[in-house]
Length: 453
Image (tube, rainbow, N blue to C red; front, side):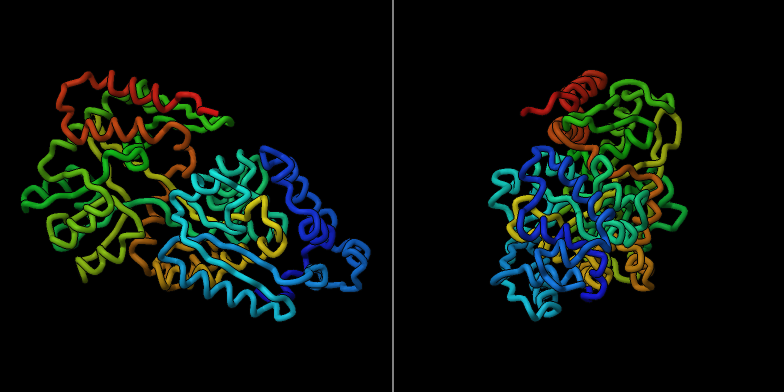
């Protein structure tokens, strides 16, 4: 990002962010001040730059930030273990664009899947900029741990496809943007080995399981994870929504809008689990299975695309999820459309620079580099439309599946443990013979419990 691209940065925001700190610390919800900051950005852009820059004669807003910066700028960053070298290089490249400023960066390891738990343990001690999975956004905002995007807000939104895009919606709470979308690949689809399946074969789960069984092989999906097993219920027209207090609404133990009962879905899942052509496996077991040749298809995500491509070579393929049989109907399996993001800590001592750094991390060039190094699907529209990204089987499959996906983040609060238990029981064939309605009632009761303060 060149300095001239930052001309829309208002001087009032710079002054407030650089010298006064962030809104999140004063508002437990992180929403009131964040919204105000975003609003002021638009109202004051192009205003009295000199007057509002604390006496600086600089007319360029970035020059105003530089002029207001005294001494070295210290910024800490948390990123996934596999992204450490990449992020360190990005920090160096960012600093090179501002030779007038001395930066001290520290980059630490923090899994995106557990970032929220670590941050909320002590938000003030968390990194200035950190990456996290999009389903954690609501909880981070509710705890006041994220600074709203107060610099280049409109540009950040435009780069991911506009305010109505999935990426922008995933990063927004109550109309305020709180994070910088980095990837749009945190979802799942069907990998398959073309040695065994045709494009028509992978349209229905019944056909896939029959082919696998006939060849002494199996296909897989992780049952003991609500992130995956919601596929059956959402596909059948059931609902899962998030309340403002972080609790869930869930009607999986009743009748869906499509007239399917929860018992019908549970029975369908049980029938699948008992099929000799199917096995429930974790991510790690999926990789082992395709490497050893026992697994010839499976529901998984882009993070295991490289393993599948290496295992199957020219027979490697991917597509959207198939239909499954439920109450005599073929029902399209749904999924989750998830995003990974960078956020700015509401307690950072250098909010202006932290925002510019987070924005830089998610620019088009960096998202393309991340795709090239990690096959991560870009959230940036221009990067996603590049020829290399479009030619990637896993990314193409994710795009196909997106029409059947719900936005990641609704599965929050007390969702995880009950769905894990329910899926594990079905994966084991419901050995105790418990009524399926009872299993459903127990799961939904757990999912919808109030969230502990």
